[in-house]
Amino acid sequence: MGKIAILTDSGCGLEPTEITNSTYVVPLHINFKEKSYRDNIDITAAEVYDRMLKGDIPKTSIAPMGDIESMIKKIKEDGYDQIISISISSGLSGIYNAMNLALGQAEGIKYKSFDTKNISIGAGFFVIYAQTLLDKFDSVDDLYDELQSKLYNSKLFFNIDTLKFLIEGGRIGKVLGGIGSMLKITPVMSCDKDGVYYTVSKKRSSEKAIEDMITQVKAFLAEHGAYKNRYYFTLVYRNDENVLQRFTTSLADEFANATKLIQYKTVSPALGVHTGPGLIGLGAFCF
Image 1 (cartoon, rainbow, N blue to C red):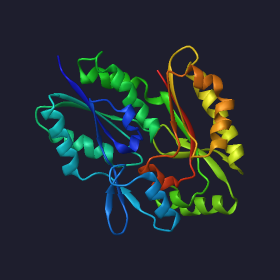
Image 2: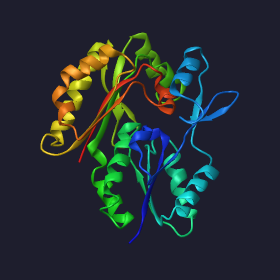
Image 3: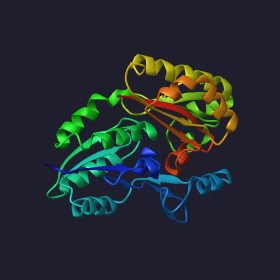
Image 4: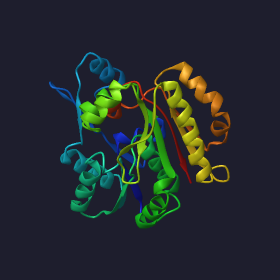
């Protein structure tokens, strides 16, 4: 019988409490002019946001190949002979390709690389789900097939209070972003089936965006039969108790029936570089 480990990246937005001993996390890097920091290791979200609000805008990058190779070596030393890598979307980051390349060069390891086509906890849901399946699958091929069958069962809707940081990070065009900022549009966004950002709807206020996200996530749950099956549910409320109360009131049934409910005050540093601290979001994974 093989022993399977999970290799993932910090862009999946998992809290330490959601990570088991079989999961190994490669941190993305947050690069300010004077220094590079490992995501959620060398720097906190609060520290990143404080500097960004003062005009010090960083960039993000994947971990050096040497760091990924060292992590794979540790996995082998810990007694694993199979690895499934689960990464944020290859359409938004190079970490999927980097981990796939490093795994391909490793000796004595059977592996599969899974591209979630998603971001933050929308990708992290797959890690949580895979952790529950490690005792059920002897082959990494079978585990991969199960995840692949759920590829479009994960959805994260989010709204940000400014398009500035997405423009700075090159995640949306300057012309489109400039028009949105000028019109004070606060879009509801998500990842499409290719794993890149798209605009779900355009709203003129956070209140309207919240209403739309609630409608969108309820429709997603219904479409995927969540009321008959099992699902994880998440919310990000940007450390705003009014937003949390709105979600709690409007989504009471969805919260109560979820197999797992994950709440975030703010997003992780790596994602926050592109969205800023003002992100609110709702997401679900049906299985």
